[in-house]
Image 1: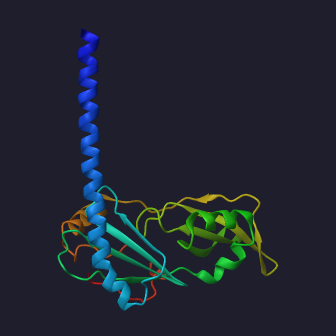
Image 2 (image 1 turned 180 degrees about the horizontal axis):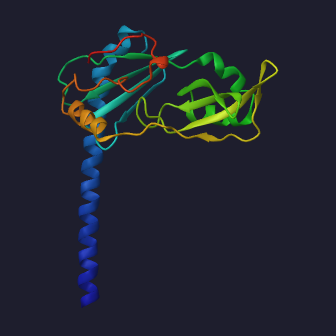
Image 3 (image 1 turned 90 degrees about the vertical axis):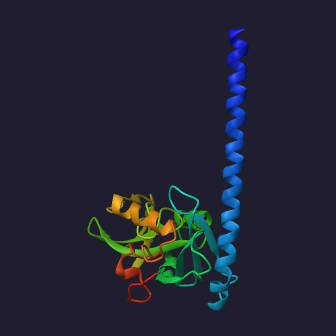
Length: 214
């Protein structure tokens, strides 16, 4: 009898768990649809209707969403809250350094990364271990200004890029603090002035050297 009671409780717990999961997924799908509808006019104004687009929730919630749009050497970031009313989302322009993409695609590691991330990659050159090193960052993951996955792909040798035999992840020196999360929460609640999509992005990546007022 004891085993039967335990089994009944397990079935009830599973039923409740499944019901909560279904409700959560339905709410998330509805929120994403709302975000897509609000974003569409902003994309149309910029002629970006057919550009590669990624819409995903920001960390720890399904209320504030992040849209990333790639257009050649530039990409755009936008934050859209379901509590943002009818205000049109702002597309904040950033730089990908797409000119550095060609040498990366000559290596097997670069081809694999491009296959995995598609156009959602950003490129830069850093001095690592005394050498000019070509690095690709996956801009899909994390949050603008806090992208955790960057990889070495080539080094500069005799005026040309030489693919690395082994690609290594480059550790980020940036971390998210409580003030960052509090601003994220305020933005999710509908306070558009609390946080712009590019607020934490370094100046070198801004296509327009201005601070947005969202």
